Length: 127
Image (cartoon, rainbow, N blue to C red):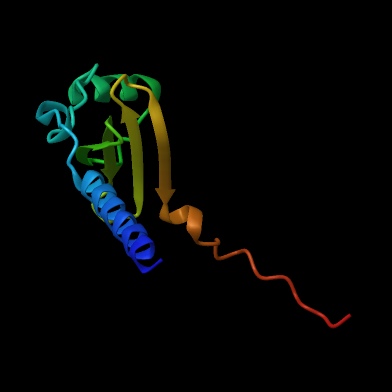
């Protein structure tokens, strides 16, 4: 009986070792596709995307400082265009995809966030 139990334990150990060896065997890897993700090829250059955006939205002339950038997220190219005035009182940010489609629009003006001086808070009374 002891021989049968010892043999059964030995078989279980050998089988468990062999499965862990098989699990650790690396799969063949295609280095070209795995190591370097493919960069998206832009349909439009940044300049073409900017021209497309400006043809759709008028940028106020008071926003005379311009910045731009681009980034890739989930293999999608995005252009970021940002205009502001020198005092940071107004700004406009527009994001566009590589086909010139506007994906985000934000306009800020300092005058929009401050209540005018003639507006007063309503009187509060106890009910």
